Length: 246
Ligand SMILES: C[S@@+](CC[C@H](N)C(=O)[O-])C[C@H]1O[C@@H](n2cnc3c(N)ncnc32)[C@H](O)[C@@H]1O
Image 1 (cartoon, rainbow, N blue to C red):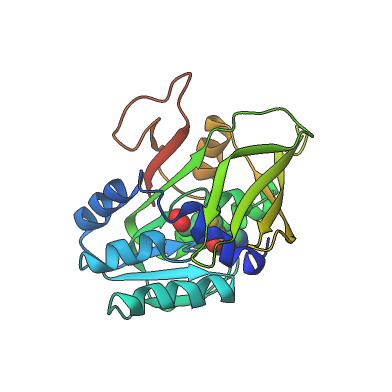
Image 2: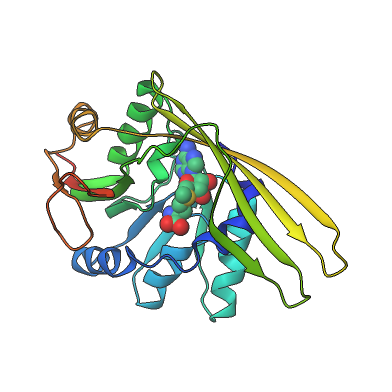
């Protein structure tokens, strides 16, 4: 899954998402050593942690997402360490006391082989006993094959407005959710331009993640249904996993 095409849209959509920042800052500060963030994107979490003095490296496959992350950091006078690479195949000399994969980064590993390859590779980059913390959303299946507008309208200084429409398809056998984004910009003269993006995510169930972690050499995780530590229950929107390398 290549996020290059998404780099512009991503910050518009998620820059204000802050639910997880306090949680990851706490986890990183308690770890006390170097941290690797997998799927660091445009540096939403990476810059937040770096600003708080955490020694953090962001791993990200998309060159355009990395460029955005570096722009964001430079704007705040930070020199961000970003490495281009894939969770399955990257190799770094350094080992880390903590690896984090915030905001569904592992949902771009589509098959059990890809998932195990990535988890084993992350395990190999952790010190013994090093921690691994990540979150995954619990999908709420909206109406498939129906165009939706979820209130995402962006107003630009030039007077144009951009509306994000989406259509989702659910492949139950593969556990894939594919979202087609239709991004419509209406210019002040009334002309309309449309951009189109497709994003496929692989969703997980709690116990398959627990088994994957065990296979890859991690200890049985602590699983919560919120960033505040609440239980995973009906109605939870997120699964938060905290484990360590055996
Ligand atoms: C939903 S974004 C999350 C970005 C960031 N962690 C945040 O919280 O804003 C998922 C990120 O995972 C990255 N990604 C996709 N496949 C990956 C892979 N195989 N290895 C590492 N990162 C990957 C994408 O490029 C994207 O930047």
